[in-house]
Image (cartoon, rainbow over all chains, first blue to last red; front, side):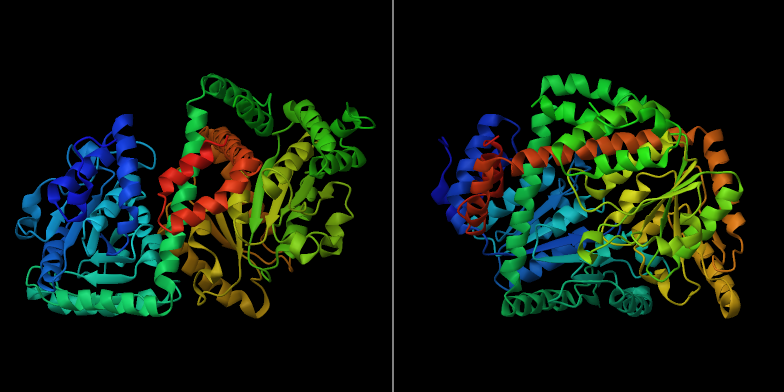
Length: 320
Length: 320
């Protein structure tokens, strides 16, 4: 079924086996997709044992530097760290935001780190589906912490927030610039705001920003089991990186104590399943030739007021 | 096909014929739905000639008093006015927000006004579908202005904004209480904020509120062809009701000059058709016995990590 794929090697953390499985997950070939599904079903019982952390922030906020510092700190604590990316813009930009591993030079050389660029836009479920599956494979390969990075483009932050246990928004020390172009909906998803670049001449500005956002966050609705934290750090100076990690550990303890950790994952899995069902239903329609031919014609009739939207929709559905 | 239904009477504005057609639209019986669709197709070429105005606002803002004052002003201008409601909570509350016509006593007695309470939650497309169809019937019966009222519950404001030409949010004179519990998304849909109850001791507060929201509205993104207006009025004292109507007329002129009026309606019709197609697709699934049986079982397997969400979704779709 999976010629040349070594499940035992993957289970024991072999990087080549992991990379090969991810390549199958990311492939556009139907044959590879089937192999990938078979591997996923075999590795599924081994997955789920990491803490999944989503990291977002506008370009220039220092995401790479932060992830490098954060990842190295985790490795010092004895963790194995996988870094994945969800970047819907990568095919347009001609390369992934993580394609250039020199961005995280020290981390990428480390045995305990596995860095994987964003998959190109793909089949059903899009980039998010592939990243979710890659996450499961990394967990099966024994990675304790999975960092999922995204740039703030389109729906990607929502997608990442929907697949992680803890969602972190990196900010610049810049209190005046309200919300720094970050959508309000994203702030409501954040489990923490981390103000990076709190170093050099920006130290004072960073602590003003801290106050500003601490006040702002109390105005937003959030999850029941956790009050979102706001803190500063300097990824460049490696300052308070341990503070950020301790916060994540505190979060994990608290939500596990209140049984909310698994509840959130269950909700995410259920939501994602529903999402895929919807996409597959849509696909059934777009792959139906009669419906495809009829749609523009019926739309014209609706716009010309010779048919109601209801009657037009009915006729499309009757094609199935 | 439509025993007892008199299309000619409807076209000439006969209230009984209109009420009868709406009753068919709102009926849950399949036979009535078919009759309703037939009537709609016949009246469709006659519809579309009104200006459709959506009105929302939190309970206590004075919606009924405003609609009464606004409607009477329109009738003075020689218009015929239909008042409809989209109230998703009405079946729970045991009655429509417009059920009690004494709310708009003077207006409801008027020959040139037609007031229809919110339909009870119903079949495909929900309350919004029935209200859209009722709107078309009112237009065919010669009503020049259709007012669609909603309380700010759930998705109802979005649904109303998606079926009208002009969307108005009524506010209280209360600058301090930021956004007055109205969702930010709703503010982005608003073509106007109208601060009601600008009378008596509240006059000064209302003008402060006016300044506050005028500033706030510039921060939000809006449609290209119109900058949302903020104004005050007193429905109780019948003050500046003409100002509100003149603003709507100005809007109509401006967007018609820029060809944006029909463009918006076309987009709404297309969006609604897509929405109905999606609902019908969902329905196909929920009406499929095999899928219905399988769903909870597959969900359990996903949560127990013995199946991926992708594989589970695939199996559901294979039932169709």
